[in-house]
Length: 132
Image 1 (cartoon, helix red, strand yellow):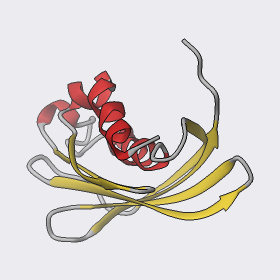
Image 2 (spheres, one colour):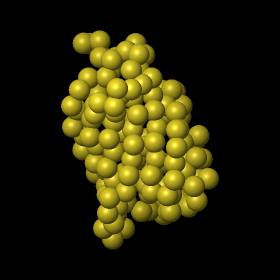
Image 3 (cartoon, one colour):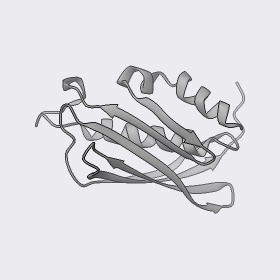
């Protein structure tokens, strides 16, 4: 895949578009996406829903891991460190860590506008042959 296809993956992902996620930057095996937290992204405590933070991190993972070949998430974990608050701009930065056969490991850190770490996500991708 080429970097243009990384952008196509972002543009064709209706979940990212509907949540208001922005594609800030992408390059070979890396991506940076951001989201401004609104009340539509909150849970019962009034802070950003963990599923929204996970989706932001997973979206950065998806753009990063599709720079060479079609890949999907095989396994992901996340640790939430601080809450995201309404008005915060959360930024997910995905970087390639290591290959493992048809799989690759990526680390994604989610920061707020104060450069505080909100969450740490690790994704393992699997190269696949998708046919439509």
